Structures are given as C-alpha cells and as structure tokens.
Image (tube, rainbow, N blue to C red; front, side, top):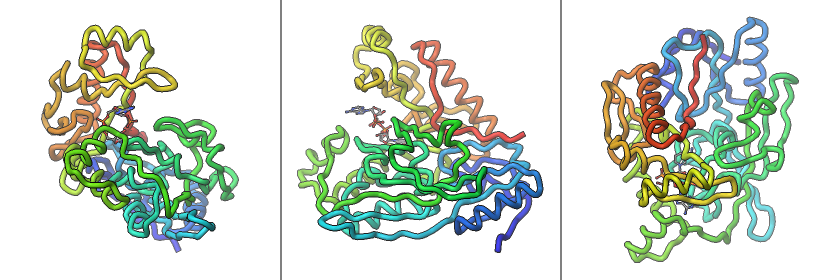
Length: 342
Ligand code: NAP
C-alpha cells in the first residue's frame, strides 16, 4: 500500500540540502510499488521524478509539481556461481557503500576501489560510477529495469547498457525513462587487487603495508576523507564538473601554456584533471561566494556553506564555467544533474 505525502521538502533528500517542495512524495519498496506509483501519476496526469540517494542532483528551489518516487527497493543476496565466482543480486535502493563494505567483509573482490562513493546501487550504473582506476561496469553482469511505457520489467545485459566513461544508455533518449530496480554484480573469492592508481599506490608505498582486500578499502576511504568532504557534515554533491576529454591538439596547446598540467591519454582524447586548472590557473581552491564555495581540499567539489539556494549554486557554477572557458577554451560539462521542473 503506497503512502503519498504532500508538500515534502526535497532539501531533506539531497546531499546538497537544496531543493523546493514535491507536490507528492512516495517511497517505492518493491517494483510493484514503483508500478503503482506510475499508475497513480498516469491517472492524475502528473510527471514522475525518480529519486535515489540525492547525492548527484541540484534540485530547483521551486520544487516539483508532480510525484517524487524515492527508490527503496531492498535486497542483497550473494549467490555462489561455482569455483570462486559469486554473484551479488542487489535491490536498487540499497546503499552503495554498504554493498561494498559487505562484499569486502565476505572476502569478495571486485568493488573495493569504489569504496565510499555516496548514493544508491540503482544510481551506480546510470553514470557508470568510477574511482581509483575501476568503473562499476567492470563488475556488472546485468541491470533490471522497469519500463514506464510498457509497465514491464526487463533485464538488460551489460552490453545493452552501453557503458562508457561516466556514461550509459540510461543517460540517452533510448534509456532515460527506464527505472533501475535491481543490479547483478560478478564478484570473486580470489580477485586481483588494483592498486595502480597513483593515490592508492602512494598510500601503500608510504605505509609500507602489503595490500589486502580490506586494506585497499580502508586506504581508499582514507584517501577520500582527505580530499572529499564528509557528506554527513557538509552540503555537497561531490565533484560538480566532469574532467574534460580534449583533442590532442588542444592538449599540446595547454601543455605549452601550463607545463605542469597532468594529462592522461584515453581512447577518445586526452583527459585533463580540471581541478588543476581551478587550483593553479584560477586560484579557486576554497573560493567562496556568499553561501556557495569550492571545498578547501578539492576545488572540483562545490559546497553549500549554509542556506544556499539552487540558484546560488547555479550562478557560482556558471562563474566557474565562464572562467575556465576564458582561460583555456574548455567548455565544462556538469557531472551533477540539474533538476528543474517548472
Ligand atoms: P584525481 O585522482 O585527482 O584525478 C583527477 C583526474 O585525473 C580524474 O579524471 C582521473 O581519472 C584522472 N587520472 C588520474 N590518474 C590517472 C591515470 N593514471 N590514468 C588516467 N586518468 C587518471 O581524482 P579525484 O577528483 O581525487 O577523485 C578520486 C577518484 O574518484 C577519481 O577516480 C574520480 O574519477 C573518482 N570520482 C568519481 C565520481 C563518480 O563516479 N561520479 C565522482 C567523484 C570522483 P579517473 O576519473 O578515470 O580516475
């Protein structure tokens, strides 16, 4: 039985602590409840907004004139698949970091480098979350989705999800309307640890410890805590902008102007850690404009210094976008999704 609440502040459900009221708010604990919420929206002629952990969105101050459905589909099962293989079957509403913690506690390899990322399991495939040399697509077997057009659930193979760097079919017109209900991950009792990412490599070199599954998780939690704010204390949505991938020609031009700018060649171009430009070319580390600012240890992370409105964050982000464009010619893309409804 669904319980609809009215006029619910979305600021209480986003890690930026920003967002106006939802006309209706409902929690879906099963795929059936999700379908029921969509039926109700159809009857009332109202739009639906799907909410996960609220950790990667900037919700407008005007709120949402429709039904916000918070995905709370639970369930976390480890299924033996023979030899050393184990499949984790996980409901979309489970907390991502809880899944990683539990996998590590069970001695299962595969997700440890993604420790500490906020948000729900269902949100992980949408932008193919990644960190410290690994992406969630490396472990995904398949994704179950609810299709509000047909009111059916279906399983999408990893291939059908069309994963790329911080991208998947769920960000395109072909898959944007699907709601993730469950994800299957392939884990292993005898995996290989990946400690090649510089920060992780340096951590073990400095500590003189031999990496183990549990130690890689603690190392990553420790590295993250030095660079990213604690979302239980600071209003933030993490990295606000994507690190841009630019052409080799553009990279050469920047190399001449900024010889110390790190550059990482990828299949599609050269990846630039844009925080370097914000720090060294624009002096924006720890910058502040009224209620909004960049985090003191990581300028890619925007923070709400208290009582910020979505419009304040938007204006501050636009200011950074303008400065980066002016300084480097690079057009920044936002990682955080702007949700405006009216
Ligand atoms: P960082 O280590 O300062 O690195 C900044 C950028 O440089 C990232 O784009 C990173 O690529 C790239 N980079 C560093 N070493 C590289 C290498 N050896 N080869 C290719 N590219 C390299 O990043 P940070 O801001 O502190 O974040 C730490 C990790 O958390 C990063 O992996 C970042 O991507 C991840 N993160 C993920 C999300 C998300 O999934 N939504 C949000 C925030 C941060 P990669 O991005 O490929 O690592």
